[in-house]
Image 1 (cartoon, rainbow, N blue to C red):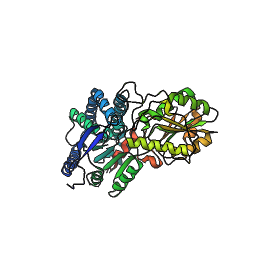
Image 2 (cartoon, rainbow, N blue to C red):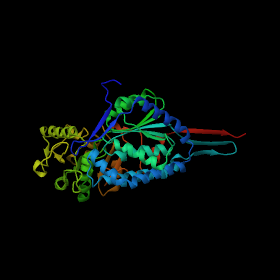
Image 3 (cartoon, one colour):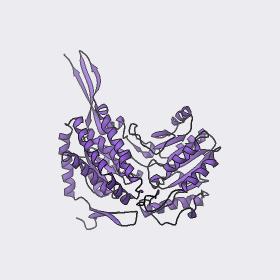
Image 4 (cartoon, one colour):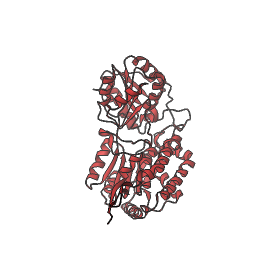
Length: 465
């Protein structure tokens, strides 16, 4: 091996800067063994019944259910989310999404009958693609990965998981869960590999589809790599998700939910709220209530049960967020949260920030922050709000806060987004397709439609003589 190539990596805990996990990178021999095992196993796995696949996947979920406490502690150490919240990633969204995708698999994967007559029998089946490479991030390491892993297995694909170097134990937990379930060898595997190794894996003809969640830059690199082989990739990328608070909104409810939507997980969410537009008639009351609630956060050691805002994932991430705020202030923005409002901290710990007097010439309203920062602007009417919401290169989700459902629907038709919420934000319903527009990604996960990207149609046309 080249002496300049790292043989291992470390996961540095944002809690205290200590090395929490250290793992070797997979060798080329390891990678070859994993690819070949997945390729061979898929030929057998695709012949198993949906009921059998469901049994394996459901039993794996039992493992996660019974090991939630240990998984939650690992999550807190690996990426810094407060321990009061980390169990809910498993008990909440993870299990909900997995169980739903198992439940709807028969409907999503069933044959589509076109004609059955004396002359013809015509129908369409859904065939698995083969072996799927899942590339998952650290911010919601189980919620993002489950969107691909469980449906891919249910569709008859084999899966190889490469998790973020910040959260490598998540991949190992998946392996333990599927081993507990007795899943046949080679059907699910993981490896720890470098970025260069990832590209080589994508170029391997035994990889039939790639699922990537991460940055726009990372998505471009994945798209370039899969383009060389003409295979598909599902890409969930960045976001700069907006909210619009109309004059008729329930302000107390809107404030409570938008503060949470902006600052939960230290703002490190692709569908977190990063910019808010408020009707001028309720703007002052909204901002005052938003700031008052923001000041109630407890920033500190995420291992403590009273902490509601833990550190950002890395010192560099906190420093980048701080620079984004400083740039906005230099351009005339006003910070409503002062240093005296919270105890003194050092990166990667980062206090929440609310900015007003912002506009769309500022980076803070255009580029993804991925931090507990939000900019708030007054608007005069619905038309101005829609124009500002659409003035973005991103389009993952957007929300409106109103009691007028008819108008919410009308504005939803105009806003360029993958998911449109009314009186809700920062949530994925597994029954609905999760997709982005513009630079927020391509493809779709969850819902019955999510199975379409994991399979290919095969048509049967039988003429009866």
